[in-house]
Amino acid sequence: MCYVTGAIMNEKNNGVPIVQLDNLEVDFYKRKGILTNPQRLNVLHKIDFTIDRGEIVVVVGESGSGKTTMANVISGQIKKTDGSYKFNGHEITSMTKEQISEYRSSIQMIQQDSYAALNPMRTMIKSLGDPMLIKKIANKSNLLEKVSKVLETVELTPTDHFINKYSHQLSGGQRQRILIARALAMNPQLILADEPVSMIDVSLRVSILNLLARLNQERGIAILYITHDLATARYVGRNGRIAVMYLGQIVETGNVQEVLANPKHPYLQALLSAVPIPDPRLSRSRKKAIIMETDLPSLSNMPSGCRYHTRCLYCKEICKSEQPQTRQYGASMVACHLVEELPKFELYDKIAENQ
Ligand code: SF4
Image (tube, rainbow, N blue to C red; front, side, top):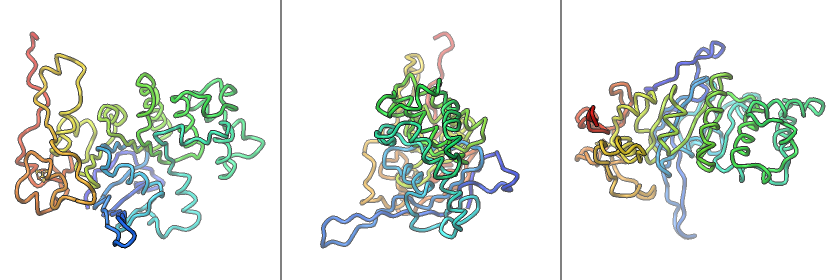
């Protein structure tokens, strides 16, 4: 098994990743009628993936590619069907009570919809404070101080202004910061951020992304950032790794800057070529976008061989019958039979110097 792993290691942990998935499979079952047998849907397939201490990993792909399912497996909300999932080196299905308790606090999730994620009947001190009391991170005498501290960390100041507010009294950006504060209150090793800025104003997005990057740099908290938006993926993951998912599989991984500057897998090339460019000069010089003519295939009618072959410009016979193995090509790990033969991908024609 081959991984591209992050650089920051924890000496106490001898470089053991926080999360290690090996050959992981997840199946869902769908029943069409009461008398029919349920149909197996293979939503994650042969996932080999690690998250090291203090690193940022971005996961990109269309809706239905399996990114959120993978995050839900990592957070423990969905159980794997097969393969291995280790948290801090311990197989998830055979951990002790103490290890399970540490696992639950150490991995925190920031949801996309902050309105749905917060209980509208609770003030912020209740929303943030109750988990701290339950986990014995705070007691009744120091609760206010601890909650204020965590609000300061997410830049919600003056803290008295927010402590007794209900979620409907806050803006979308402020609610998103409350979700980050709630995650931070548990002293996590890893934050799973699932499209955390997709429902807030564009003008506020950068400040939330910068907050996540600051928590990563200053506190060494690992971040798994899930998005379909390559622009925010590039911004958040500028010092990290990227994993590109397609129909339940990771098709390309590597350093974010290198992978996005020199994409190898035809799916990532198509995604990049479809991103709108606001600069008219660059837009004019862009090569023709690679259009994926068909929609994402259904999980209930999974293509044989390479799962991308029904949409791939370069598909050959082997692609229809054999699944490609993930292998190193340049600086990336790529799952494509023909990666060595594909034409070099260039997003732009050369821009004339006097243009
Ligand atoms: Fe395209 Fe074949 Fe590569 Fe799949 S294996 S991405 S179909 S060229």
